[in-house]
Length: 286
Ligand SMILES: Nc1ncnc2c1ncn2[C@@H]1O[C@H](COP(=O)(O)OP(=O)(O)OP(=O)(O)O)[C@@H](O)[C@H]1O
Image (cartoon, rainbow, N blue to C red):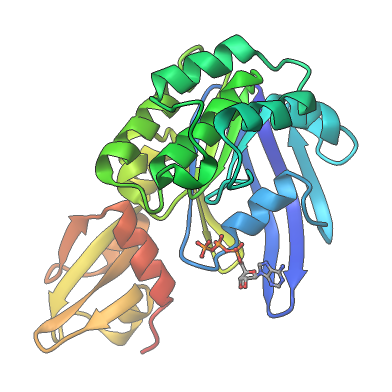
């Protein structure tokens, strides 16, 4: 199985913030959700993949090619969707096509027209008159009309209603159906990932906390709950994002440590939201 994306030892500094030795890869044919709290480094990583900003060190390969030396070749085959459209407000959809088609050797007007129809987008409408969901669909129509085989989406579902989000997830699932096309998308909305993601990469404070299959992520952590005095200070130290309240405590724990919590506590399965929220609170201090 070849990797569509390989990131090795990537470092980038912005004042107080740094991406620290980021490593992850995405096998071809799959959808990866890129998750993490606000300011964790998701957009920065995506911009580095697209060579929009300069890295301090590290390697990025897309389709097995170095992302800097083969930038043009890679961009021909990558479709990019940001949370804000990059089209001029006054353009109608014909103008959008006129502006973008020259960037791509494999641009297909037939495909573009087909996707506009499929997504119920009227060619005469101006960009500024499209709803947020329609703008997302327009960016996806552009990405699919130049025959992209790797879609990179940054927060594509933020601000979309549940129906539009569901439609977008269906589009992504269909996109990877032939096993040669892949998707990386960053999101805060983990329920979207439940539906479509095969792999998850979780970044927190510039560091990759987890990368692997979605099932493995959910199996790797659990919620631990208990009453006051149910655990000792050593056990407390193992809990991430410890939340203490009148009756007791709850927090996140590595599944490999659940057996060390004693028999008074309750161990429960966790969701991706639990993992993000508790990890973001950090490791508990006694
Ligand atoms: N051009 C820049 N100059 C200085 N700092 C920056 C710049 N771009 C990003 N940062 C900082 O880098 C950190 C990571 O930002 P980034 O946008 O990558 O996070 P994110 O995970 O995408 O967050 P969100 O989910 O809120 O979009 C933040 O602290 C941000 O302020």
